[in-house]
Length: 393
Ligand code: FEO
Image (cartoon, rainbow, N blue to C red; front, top):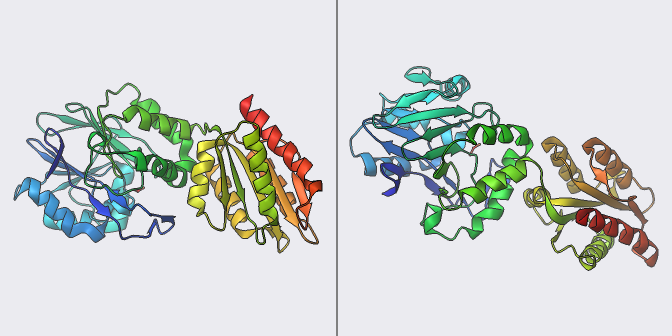
C-alpha cells in the first residue's frame, strides 16, 4: 500500500492499454486514474477510476481498509474516467454517502441512476472526518461545470480533480519526491492544451480562489502527486491559462509533395539565424494535432502554412484552425503562408482565420504558385524576420 501523507493513501491505477484518452488524444506513455483514501474517524474516498480497472481498484482499497466500510465518496469531477466506478463502489459499500455539489449530484443521477445516499455541498462548505474537516471549493468549468476541489487543512493537501494533472502512467513512484518527473512536463502541457485549454478564464478564477491556501501536497486525478514541484506546476497552469507563450515559434504546415514544406524549412532557418532558439516544425499529417496544440500553447509565435486543396485549406490544417478557434487561443503573434497550383484559396481562408482570432499578424502572407523558387524566398524571409523581431521586442 502507498501512504503519501499520514493517513492518506494512494489507491489509483495505471492504464497502459488504452490508445486514446477521450477516444481522441494519443497516450504513448499511458495515463493514471488517481484516487485517494483518507482514513480518519470517518473514511473518505476521493474520486474513483475508469471502470475497466474496478477489480484492481477494489483490491487496493481493501488492502488499506480490510473490511472497514467507507463513509464518504467525495466526487470532485464526474467525467467517466473518474466516475464510472461509482456504481461499482456503491454496490460494494452500500452505506457510502456520495458527496458532491448540486451539478455533480444531477450528473450522478443522469449517468448512473443514483439519487439516494447523497450529500450536497456548496462552495466553502466543510465535512468533518474526525480529526480533520474537508473544505470544498467549487471551481466550475475546470473543465466541466461540476468540477470542484477538496482541501484537507490538517495535511495541507489539495485534491484538485483534473487540474494540475497530466498524461503519463506512474512508473512505480507516486509522489514527485521519489521519481524523475522529466517525462511529465510536456505531457502536462499536452493535457492542458487539449483537455482544459478552452477554459483559461475559469482556471484563472480557480487559481485566485486557492491563492491564500497553504498547499503542501497536490493530489490530482492524473499523473504524479506534487510535493516538491508545486510552484512549477501552478506556474505552468497560470501561464497556460493566461495564454502566455514563451518566445519561440511553431510552424505548422501541410505539404503533399514538399513544396509548401520548403517554405516552412526556409522560414525556420531564418528564425534561427535571427536568434530564435525554440523553433518547432510540425508536419500536420505526421504530428497528431494534440502535439501541435501543445506547442502552440507553449510558444507565442505561430506560423501556419497550407496548400490549397479542393479550393479550401489542406484538411489537417482546417482541423487545426478549427481546434484553435474552439479553444479561443489568445495573444499569439501570427504569420501564414500558402500555395496553390492553378487557383489559390488557402491564404484567403487563413486571412479570415487570422481576423477571427484577433491575433497580431506580423507580416503580409506569402502565397506561392506551384514550386519553390528564389522569388518566394524574399517574402518568406520577411515574414520570418518580422516574427523574430516581434518576439524579441
Ligand atoms: Fe480526467 Fe475530465 O477527466
